[in-house]
Length: 218
Image (cartoon, rainbow, N blue to C red; front, side):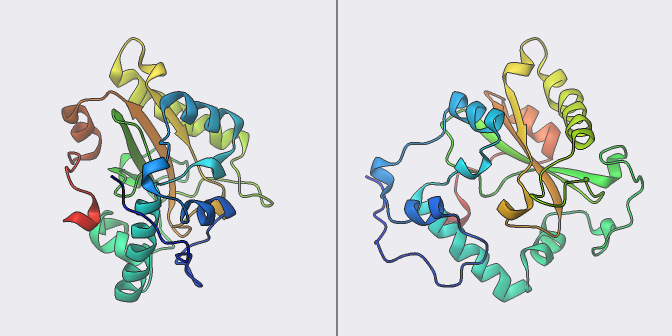
């Protein structure tokens, strides 16, 4: 049985912006929660309704607790990532990338497994591509510009889709959250979802293998 979440669990000052949907999720239980399957993920991305991505009630609560603890210890999630997950050669933001063109230079990006993925059905893996080169976005919503979509789409194809061979395009999805939905705004990044990819391939992309335990279980 899943862990029950008490109805009075929405923090007064969360470590990142909570949508109304997040607040509703926190009042649910894991037992009745429905995870994202591949077609649901495709629907969300194609419709650009990125606010529909969700974590289980337990994982959302744990994520809030973790981000609060990280901010207390490191001052910000950005500081934590720079000290523990991203290349030290990048220095501190604002960065000086090797190339002004996003994703053009290998030293300007880092592919990592997402330690806190959304609620995904088994067989789906959540990867994040971090880049020290800014990706242009519009000023109103913080959504991507057409040229930015093309640059990321080309990168995803050559890095992930082509690596999977025939049918690879049916096993890879990607999206970039609008600025308002990002929990780590100071570091440029976008998300890649892959289906039925073996651990050796994931390690080739990210330098790490999926962990058996969630972050709070370690």
